[in-house]
Length: 334
Image 1 (cartoon, rainbow, N blue to C red):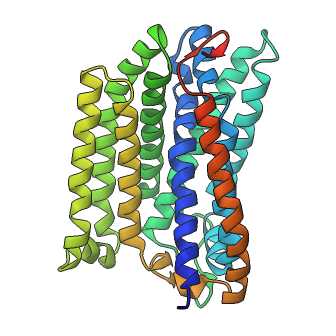
Image 2: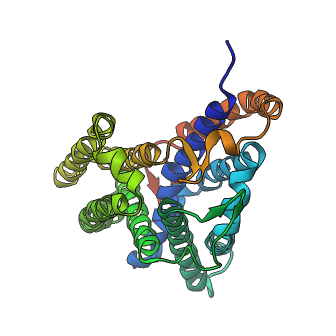
């Protein structure tokens, strides 16, 4: 039996992107919430909660971006040409955020500057990711095998909406992470924030979902056509279920349930994107097979991925296991 290498690699890239979103999403969310944590001890506690894992989470971004370049070079060339500005802004914001993460512990006099740098870098990175997503969903102009649009085609009302939606969504992940990982004052503050950002996230998910079918006829057919609706229909129902669990978990002051429900919302939204995109790598211009590198290259790279991906999963799981439990502002995890 011959392996369908382009589809295998598309699934691997999709998994890497999803892993990045759900893992790095909550630590970006912690940074987004930084201005809402008034006390220095609260900010220390919030930062300590992600300190052992934040840099490892970004491994998935490297895997997703590097994998796209290696196995889907045509898609990489088109997407980077179209979305150069938001992607570069995202990378610079992540670098700036990483520097702030380390430097705020090295100074007392200028710590407030690095606190704001950490928050600004997190917000800007999340917003740039959302804009990138929105620009990809709304479509990229392709002529032949090259980008045929303009410098600012990515900047539209829809992409700005998705940018704001992702910032609010990451804030929800950050708040529910702090509910799970902290105690006392920080946890109470996180509950208060989550009660505001949870409904806002759900409203923005609804707004983006309702707008998307009007962007392209193929999106409308995927979600409302027959028999495609049989595949797509369960996703909104599952979103409603996750939303119910999220709001009930917050109301009942559960610790883990809101975080798991927030992750479920992101996973379901990602599945919805997959339903809208498939079988395109650049909607609706370049398919997965058209964008793929030659099969011998894909096979060679798959051997490396078969070794690398389990290793990344193993050390990621080990890190989260070692740093399980609650965190304090002084002394870290206990």
